[in-house]
Image (spheres, helix red, strand yellow):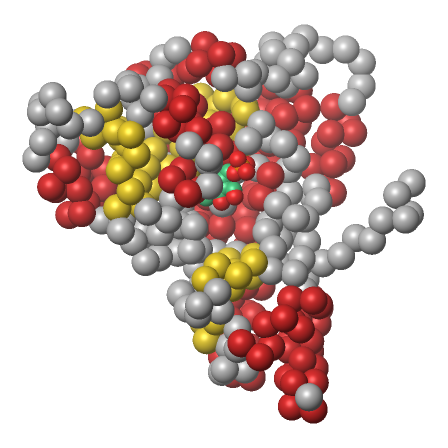
Length: 353
Ligand SMILES: Cc1ncc(COP(=O)(O)O)c(C=O)c1O
């Protein structure tokens, strides 16, 4: 089947890769007999055990289909239409969700300036001065992306500082963890350390970017966050009937810490690539520290077109040829070598032109 299709290798996104074999195996194993729908089956219970092992006993994990839904529903139970969500101006929430938070929550987003996708508590001070002012959207939630859209990680101390600040101001703390596992691998901490451990109220946990298929989770830690989630999810049309297939994927992902294996692998290869570019191709300027599976690099203008024809990747800023190379779970050391060879080849071609 599908022999006529050409499956190529891409640096475009970690969404471009397929399903991890162990996740596919779990899907196959779950594909037997009949089971109750809507999360009432035994497989969901098994996955719950794994979630509690990974994130601590207080966690309540709820499945959705997309990361956008995870982000929006994370806030749905607590953010009202006159309230506001503070995030970075680079946040997926702000730039890449087609106004879904504004539409579904009716809320205002307050994007704060950021070069690398991270923000700091001091940046919120002026917004918070108008708390209680009826003319002003009331900040209610801070959403941090970890790792950021530029692949950079907050440290545990920075996250704890955010928690201290948000608690003092009565703000909820949300983490967009579309690639949370990569941050945990880079910081060498557990998933619990990075979520419950820093006092996050709600976390969007990515699956699709890490070898799963159409499976994302919202992790609820506090009673306020847990309250009424299931009703909002149903209204948002994100309640799956055949939940066992989402649960099976997360079961495989969390069991025996497959998440860490995948994240260490992709982050390790991104860092290896960074190192080899620095040594062998200093004209490819690394724009930001590589702290996850994303590499942001200024590709020399004369090589851009030819290189993109060999390996697809996105151009983030065409003025500076800033490009994003995203390393997927199935990328290998040989692929790094192939890419470096391709760079050498396009350089040779460009000198011959
Ligand atoms: C940081 C971040 N958050 C959330 C998402 C969710 O995306 P989607 O709704 O496409 O699953 C993405 C996807 O690119 C992302 O990069």
